[in-house]
Figure 1 (cartoon, rainbow, N blue to C red):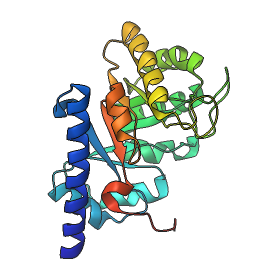
Figure 2: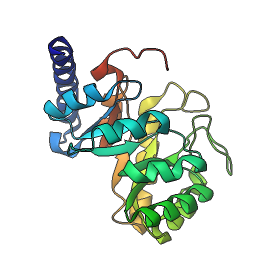
Figure 3: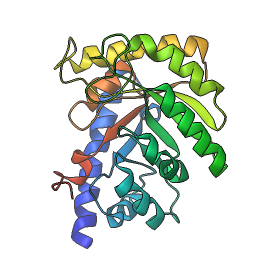
Figure 4: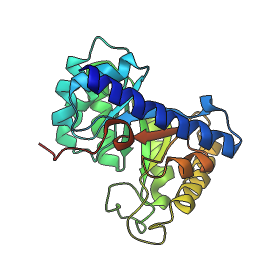
Length: 239
C-alpha cells in the first residue's frame, strides 16, 4: 500500500504541475480549475489514498462499479461525478450517491433523474453532455446531445424538481469535423457555454479535457478536467 501511495502521490504531483502550468499559460489562476480524478476500474482503496492526498472530486462511468465503491467510501468528504452514458434503469442507483451527473443528453433521462432525486430527497447537479460529432436531433457516438438541442434540454433540467443545471460537458470527438482537433472542439464548447450562461447564469461549469488534452481544455476555459490514466496509471482490462 505504501508503494501505491507513493506512486499515486507522484502521478498526482505531475498532473498538478501540468494543470498549474496550463493555467499560467492561459492567464488563469490555479483555483479556476477543479481536478476530477476518474477512478473507474480502480478499487476503493485507491479512492481512499487519493482522498488522503487531497483529492475531493472523483468520477465513475459504470454504476455497477461506482455504487459499491461510493458505499465503501461513504465516510469520506468526496464529490462523486457520474460521467458515463447512463441508462434509465440505472438512474435510481446513481441518484443515491452521485452529486453531479455529467452525461445528461436526452429528455427521458432528465425525467428519470428528477423522479429519482425527489425520491432520494437529494439535489443532483446536471451537466448537458454536448456531442460535437452529432447532427441535429441525433446523439453522438460517445453519448451527448447535438449542439442545437442544448437549450431545450437545459430548460428541461432547470424546470425539473430535484435537479440543478450546472453547465456543459464534452468528450473530444473521434469523428466528424473536430476529430483530432481538441483545441477547436473545446473552444467551440466554450462558445455554447457562454451562450447558455446568457439564459442560465448559474450554469457556469464546463467539464472538458482528460489525461491527454487537459492543457487544451484549460486554454479554452474549462472549469473542470477529468483525469484518470495520468493519475492512476494505465487501466487494467475491464472486469
